[in-house]
Amino acid sequence: MSSTPTLWALILQGGYIMIPLALLLLLSIYIFIERCLIIASAMRDDKSLMKRVRDCVLEGDIDNARRICRKTETPAARLILKGISRIGRPMADVLMAVENTGNIEISRLSKGLSLLSTTAAGAPMLGFLGTVVGMMDAFFQMSAAGRAADITTLSGGISLALVTTVAGLIVGILAL
Image (cartoon, rainbow, N blue to C red; front, side, top):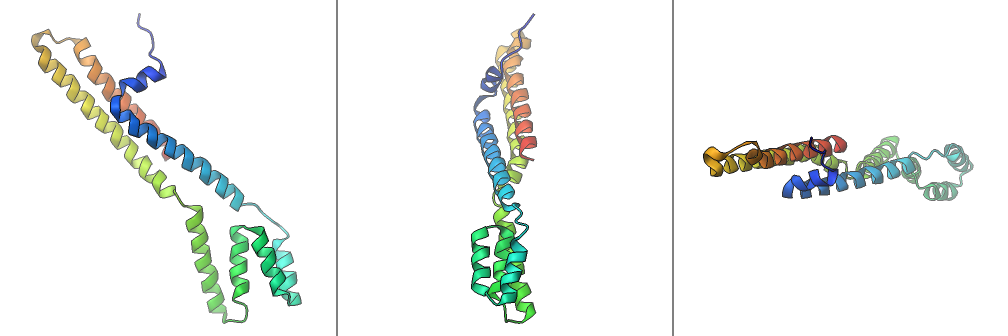
């Protein structure tokens, strides 16, 4: 009866292809946590912000309305600040400025997500590369052993193939 290998033993069996897969996994975890924190911070809802800004604008205290927006530091406050900065201009200019600022805010919030997407696509490909390398190794070993080839001759290459495939799929799925 054979014992089940530990996770570390499996990782070592995967060979050198496991190094970029491990780096991609760490990068994906970092980006995921960092984006969660940024988005959670951006979604902070200050229910009184609009009322305070509107009251200041109606009273003609534009400087105080700007100060309130700068102090709040959320994407919504930055959009309002951009709109306030265009007071007195044609409505089309105000709307265009707010829309441009919205696009910038969306870009800030989605920073790094393209790298996560690339990892989701690339990690399985690295795993499949490990599969091919492992199968090539198994066939080279079988060829070198000639008629003496048995399952133990093939097992090293096949285990490399399977471990890297699984690792690539795991990293890709987590990144996705």
